[in-house]
Length: 460
Image (cartoon, rainbow, N blue to C red; front, side, top):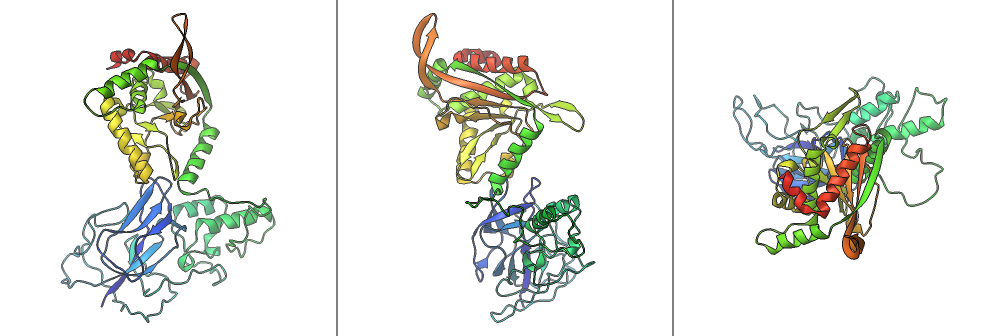
């Protein structure tokens, strides 16, 4: 008889605690094989296709497209036909070797666990019992077959003080602890009463409106929200990439005492150098790649700007490597892919890596590792047809170079008025890591390299 296994949303790494279901790739009743992608989810970092580590028949899916699930929440159940394995033989057959963080087969189990097979039939009811706990944080044996159980609301069952807390996400636990809420007194709106972040936030919002509330029987009421009374209008949830950007921008403005300086530069010679490079044999070089190489040279001369601030220790940490981020606008919002070890790359290598990461960002296939760890950001907002900006620093970095559009303008050259290709450069920097002299020196060096690319030869 087949065994029904519950596959839970795995840990996607980088400290991510939840994900939004974007698209299901399988239907209930469909046969899946080991490592087959079954659902596409969006995290605060990227779109991720989640593979199923077991082969079998999908018996149920949990969560509609657009729903947000915490890490560890049930994703789907799969009926797996058990292979006959001797009692004393280690059980590793049939498991996935494609390990995503939090699940897979890092090492075989010492001994196969005894489980009671559950027959899979179309007429089998879906009991409301909670899943049987398992030592595996993602996969567990559950008595659930057939269609997915109906989503429980907060009115389906009373809260039971002292019962096990139906919560998985550490974010939910921390949020409740910060606001003095006892999770045992809540009944969640997730599958099988799972307490979600929205449940806790609803109670917090309700408590902020009723100072003298009775805390002896608190239930999560999704209908009560701190947004009550707000003006009617279209509401767009701040979640996924958009929510991550909002959080980072807010933190940057809150923590970083930033300042901005800017200068106009004659980019005519830079454009001529690029044209000459692209006329020769070899891969094409973009303006962004040239600017990236200039940034690397400037950071070698002014390392104060390739740093971060340790607020707890009250120390400025100068970083040994340059991991260059660059802002990219996509259909999913603003993302900042990171070119690792940019200080070791040539212009050709930078051009190739920038092109690769740009393509992945447009397709929504950047991994969390390719979106984190930057030490300095290059923001080419000139592609939007604007000249200047005051960028918000990409926390926890210390600076960002902004580049406007390169357009023909009147320019005084050797005492004569001429038409030249001019660009406005701006540098937003953390005033804790350096003063205006260092920031001005960095920006002036960048402008000198733009105006006379031969200056870069000294940095090679």
